[in-house]
Length: 372
Ligand code: AMP
Image 1: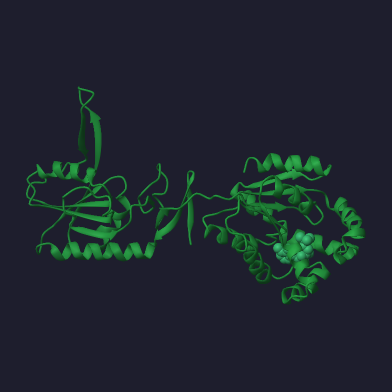
Image 2 (image 1 turned 30 degrees about the horizontal axis):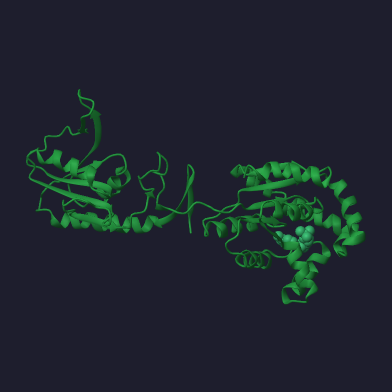
C-alpha cells in the first residue's frame, strides 16, 4: 500500500490514478449524453481543488465546450460582523448558457449552495453540478447533485488537486488520512562488534521497546537445529550474509509475533539496501515507519581487536578467526555501509561516537533516541 506524508500527517492511497481516470471518463460521457445535441456547455471549475479534475474532465469530454474557473472569496463588508461571499473570475456573459459546475469534492454542501445561489441570478438556461467525490453522510443541503463520480465516507482526502495545508495537490492518486504512527522504531546500526547488542539490551528497557537481533535469532535457530538454523549456519560460519529472502521472512515473522508494542530496536537488520526497502514497505503497511537509523561509529581496526577479545567468551565461532572477521567487515563495507546514504537521504541518519564506556555510549544514544 502506498503511504505518503504531508506536513505531520500520514495518508494512504485510497483511489488509484487508474480508477480516477475511469471515473472521470464515465462522468464526461454521462454529462455529454444528457446535453441537447449541439449544445456547447460552459464548464466552471471551483478553484483551487478542482484544477486537476477539470483539466482531465474537459479532455475526456467529446465535443465543443468552454471552460472557466471561479473562486469563492469571503470579504468583510463595511459592517465587520457581516461576511459577504463573492465569486471571483466570472467574466463571461452567462445568460442563456448551459453551465455545469465542476467540483472536486462536495461534503457539507455549504460552499456549493453559496455558489449555486450566485449563479441562479444570472439568467442561465440550465445549471448542473458535477462532482468527482461526494460525501453523502455529511451533505446537509437539499440541492440535488446531477453527477457524482464516487460517493465516499467522511474521511479527509488529499491528492489529485486536493490539499492538506497547501500540500498534496500534485499527487496523481487520492489519499486518505491514516492513523498517525504510534511506534518508535529504531535501526541500531554499525559494523560488527560496534556494541549494538550490548546497547540494545539497555535501551530496550529504558524505552520499553522490543529488541530484535537477527544474529541472535539465527543463533537460536542453529542451537535448536531448526531448518532455518541449518540453512543459515553455512553462511554465518563463513562470515557471509544470509540470503535476503531468508532473513526478510524471518524478520517479518519476528515483528508479527509482537503486536501492540511501543516499537522495535532493529539490531543487525537491515543489512542490505533491499532489506531496508522491504522494511520500509512492511512498516508502511501498518501505518508505521523507521524513526531513525542510529549508528555507532567505530574504526575497523579497533573492532577486530574487540571481536577477538569477545570471541574468548562469546562462544561464537565467527568471533575467533580473524579471516572470518575480516570477511564480515568486507560484507559490511560492500553491502551494508550503503545504508548510511539510504537513511541520510531521508534525513533520518544519526551517527554517534561508539568509542567510550558502555554508560557513556548509552547516554549518547539516549540523547538521539529522545528526539525520535
Ligand atoms: P550479528 O550477530 O548481527 O553480528 O550477525 C551474525 C551473522 O548473522 C552475520 O554475519 C550474518 O551471517 C547473519 N545475519 C544477521 N543479520 C543478518 C541480516 N540482516 N542479513 C543477512 N545476514 C544476517
